[in-house]
Structure formats: C-alpha cells, structure tokens
Image (cartoon, rainbow, N blue to C red; front, side):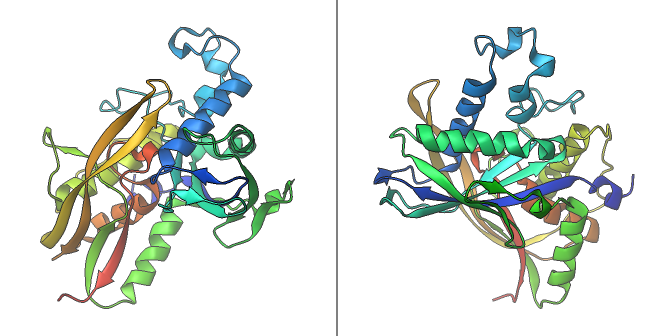
Length: 312
C-alpha cells in the first residue's frame, strides 16, 4: 500500500462543552477521570454478567468490548493487551476548582468502527454527568457538542447528525502539510502531554527522531488493523535529524477506581527542533497529531503538534 492509502482511516473529532452543576474539585489532569467514568457508565448500562470480560460468553456481541476496549479481530504482534485504539479523549483544562455554572471542555476523537457508536458514547457521558466524575463525583450536564467546524451536533438535548463530520487521517495530513509549506523556518514538534515510549528496549529519557516517527507509524498500523487492513509498514529509508531539544521528565497521577489508589504514570515532555524532515516521515507525524503516540494514549499521553519556527 502507498502511504495515502495507509492514511485512509476515518475519524470524527468532537468538542464537548460541559456545565458544572455544583462547586467541585477535579483533578488537574482530567482525561483519566473522564475515560474511567465513561467506562464505568458503559458497564453499568450494558454489562449483562459480572464484568469478568475474559470469561463472558457474550463477549463477541458486547457493546462495551466494541466501544471501550475497541475490539480487534487481528492485532500486530507487539499489541499484547487491551489497546483502546478506537477513541481518544483530550482535555487541556488543568484547573482544579470549579464553581456551579462554570464550563469545562474536552475533545473526543473516534476512529474506524467506533464512529458508528457515537450515541453510545454520548449516552455514557450523559449518565456520567448525573453520577458525577472524579473521586468527588462532580456532577455536570452536556451543554453542547460541536464538530471541528464549530457546528452544533448536540444542543438542548437535540442531536443533529447532519453535523456529524467524518474525515480521514489522509485529509488531515494533507491539510496540515499544505499549511506548514506556507510557513518559514524549521520543523518543530511540541509535546502537549507526556510521551511514554519504549525504544530499543528502554523507555525514552530524550527524544529520538527515529523513535517518534516509528511511534506514529505504529499507530497508523494499529488503526489499519482496527478497520480490517492487515498490513505491515515498510521501513522509512531515513528519519528526521534533531538539531536540538528541550526535554523534562513529567509524571501524571491518576486515581484508579478498581485499585482505590493513586497511580503514577511517568513520561517526558518538551520540544524538538529538527535539522531535516523527510516527506514520508512528515506525513506520519502529522497523522500522529490526531492519533497520539506511545503508551497510555487513552490517559491523554503522547499528544503533540508539529510547527515551523525560525531557528534561534
């Protein structure tokens, strides 16, 4: 397959705007709480047994397995666990104190077969608002849901599916590449959330051009498997060279309801200035803006943006 075909992966990205219904304290990083709450609501609404998924005779027909765990009939060899590749949640509001009536935004991106389950995700977040999110069970209502053009998909409990905008990774990469071509300077990569990634058997403590490109390639490969394309990506003949980088270790704490404990997720965060950027590598990295890269992406890790800036 040529690269444009490999990137023909459908996605929908939506902005959820929540109205907090009472004074509340929320964690600084909210992606894990939103994901965990969504999963709990999916189980409450749909599980017909005892939540022991591995032993359930109905797993092939289970909507929780399809939506929360992103069922994959075939997987690349490096995927050994439950990889939730069908969706991503992003929240860049790091406020912790909210008063009644204040707003909180987050983004939900659905890939491949997960796209058809929008109403299931919407219902899960609606019920989460009634039950409350986070350890302190902060209640909210969904004020509106918009597509990336700003058109209202959900407003006043009315759903307008004409605003459900399905795009592809290829379209995103082409649009972003054309935008960047009109800019001056060298390519940079700014990580908006920590990156947790193994490269050559060890977790990265510094950025590597080869590692980040291969991370983006793996997400493309996994999503192709998810939509039924069993492919193996060809190696890139060359990888981008890094001129300089700023890097720092960062740790995210999440509360695990199943363990009733706080768990620490480490990673690295910072900025890369590239000396060179092969065309094929650029397209994978632009696709990775949407898919994220590395481990713990379902907890918000591995989010970045590619830019062009003049060297200092």
